[in-house]
Length: 261
Image (tube, one colour):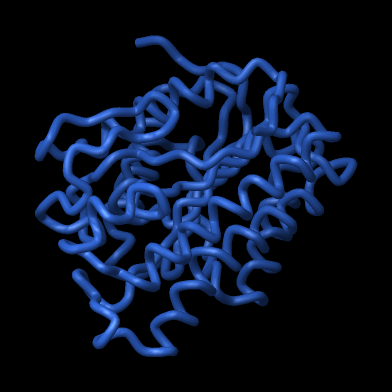
């Protein structure tokens, strides 16, 4: 199996389930021998992280599990210091902002959505990646990521598309989730411009609908074609592995040249 050799230190948020867990599994297999993965989740010792701990056990020396709640500033700072100490002069090469929540449960009509739902979702889905990107960039050698093809990848979704909203709104209104991911897209665009002087790619990727606890058991985005050349057949869910494979392809194709568009 071909390996990806350009990254040596990778940090993934929301790594204990769904797409995040599959990312850890696939990265552990596909990355080169010197690569190390920092798998972050809120409760590393809790029952929800059992599968992640099993993966780490099967890959000794390859995965370090880090406690991180992206909605908590103290937790973010502590995790950033921990990672910074561990990577030392090696620098961080890839940050994948995967952690996200969806409240209330789908279809989440306006009548069922509270102010707290909106605030909680924004704090995790928008402020979390914002703070993670800043803290990670500040806690690596020289205040920048070290790899020529360093990247920050934000996991977005087609339901954040203003243009596509009429196609999916009737089946899943999801006010907090939709609007937070739309805000994440703008955050991505702004940070792509901000980080260009350091030659760091910042991109948002739609992995396709994946049958996970948060993604649900049925496709609410129909047959929409995902961004960055990722696509799906109508009514057919992506597996976590397919999504991760697509993410590998897109990130690995980064040559260090940016168009920031």
